[in-house]
Image (cartoon, rainbow, N blue to C red; front, side, top):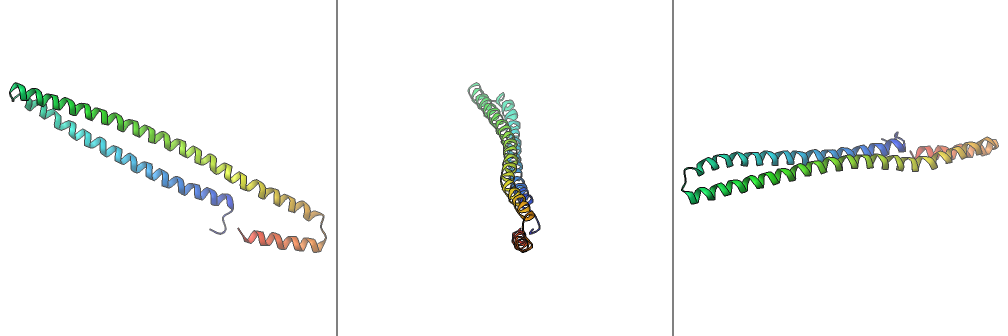
Length: 148
């Protein structure tokens, strides 16, 4: 790890954050799929309930049919909400990935530009120095290089 430059470390850190984020989104999608499956099972129970209503007297038959209709409404509403939630999660994931890429680029650039300027200034300064000055500069550059 100590041989990685600053840009590589930033990108590696961003990659790890992105991996954690994508894992959490995938887990959330699994929960949405499980909720859909459970709602489907409830919907399958409603159909026999409607069929059994025919064998009841008129008052109970109407009550059972009303209950079945209400269950269908609740199931449909929950499926709509799950679909919206999945769409929002997907859009949020794409936005977060794009924002993360942009931020990693900006942060890396903001760090690398000043460092590149310092290296360029040191290179130019080194061209006009005496031999003793060059030795001092080499020591300073060596010390800076060891902090990587």
